[in-house]
Amino acid sequence: MTDEILSFLQEALRLKRMVRSGWIYSGVAKADTESVADHSYMITLLSLILALREKEKGNNIDIEKTLVMAILHDLPESVSQDLDRRIRKYSPKKYDEFKTELDGEAIKFLLSNLPEKTNNYLLEIFQEFHAKKSLEARIVMEADRLETIMQMNDYIQRGYPQELFSEFIKNFSEEVDDYKNEDVKNIARYLLEGTK
Image 1 (cartoon, rainbow, N blue to C red):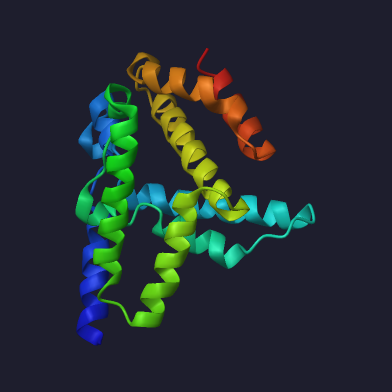
Image 2 (cartoon, helix red, strand yellow):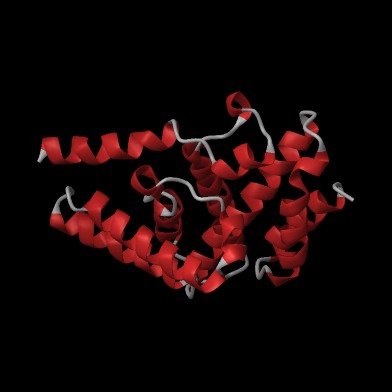
């Protein structure tokens, strides 16, 4: 079993070297581009804070499940690559179907080396995340969006021209009112206000 667990971890290790393609496409230098692992760490941290805030408000939330979702959400990219979501505009329905199938098959492949109980537990949580219905899944999804806004803002603060991110800014400005989490909505609005 040690070999199988090590094999799983070596697959996941690729995320530390895999840069996020959207930033490269926008013109961020490869040396400055965050890795998928960098992104996933920040989403996990954001998800923890958002989940704790929900708990403080008296809402029933499973913090462990939230964190597992956050850690797993981009794990398939270790074998399937990071796809810039902006390509969705060319074929939204086909892209969504393709991405769902790609992520589903990739996570099954990755988890297949783990012990059966661990595999089943993680796969169930990953599938719940992709169903997008639970509070935990919505928190991680919105943390994912907020982290990208935060990273974009960081690049602008470091001197990258705001114009490089005009498509990101447009897309985020259009969707910010749809965020359900008030903390995410307020932080996103604040950061996007600075881009006007």
